[in-house]
Amino acid sequence: MSAGSSRPPRPVVLLRPVPGTSVVHELWAGTKLLAVSAISVLLTFYPGWVPIAAVAALVLLGARLAHIPAGALPTVPRLLWILLLIGGGMAALAGGSPQLGPLELGGLLHFLRITALSLVLLGLGGMVSWTTNVAEIAPAVATLGRPLRLLRVPIDDWSVTLALALRAFPMLIDEFRVLYAARRLRPTQTPRTRRERRRRRATEVVDLLAAAMTVTLRRADEMGDAITARGGTGQISAHPSGPKKADWWALAIVATVCGAALVAELTVLSTSRM
Image 1 (cartoon, rainbow, N blue to C red):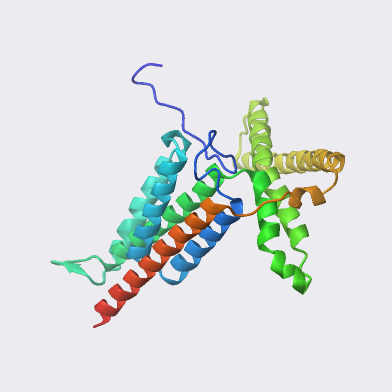
Image 2 (cartoon, rainbow, N blue to C red):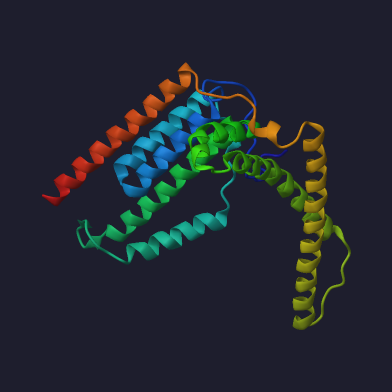
């Protein structure tokens, strides 16, 4: 490849762990779910700069320990950068404190905080996706929801449904990409009028939806046969799983970081109000 040629964009890879092993890979899936839940609650009620910075540092530390390569990150489209610049400019027009000379930076700081919060949450979800096998999610959910069985909540059925959805999601994305590529390779006549172009687009949408439903039903039938051959849906959530010593250390680190960030945020808020 020549130096002047552009590299192909890296697609978004979901629900597929990065090859290899590490401390983060070997953690129990329930530990990661508990950590994500605790961090989400913290950022929901206190989406300040201090908690965002603390969670971002935690995510970067986890990525370093998990040996996540830079190639795992998807390519950001140029359109998204343009939209972010436009959004930042529009938010800057809102004004507000603090002020830097004649400029009011309140709106721009709010926009940057929301953007940073979104990036941190995406990175947190990516860490779980890149270090967790999909087969480990259902047993972890069944173990964490075991107390709900006393209330006759069908936690096993919920965990099986979640596992099947997570397994089918990447597979269906690949199928839809193949269908779309095959549709584009079909020879078509160039529409002459605007009405013919609208009718052609509507026909393509209908054809793609019909093909997608057919592929989905076929994949569901194949998955049902495979599950039946392996002993039924109960085997999906019956796999023994539980926390180990490293999981308790990981939960303690997450709790310490969240607690310190919460105390610092409350201190900053109380200082700013005085």
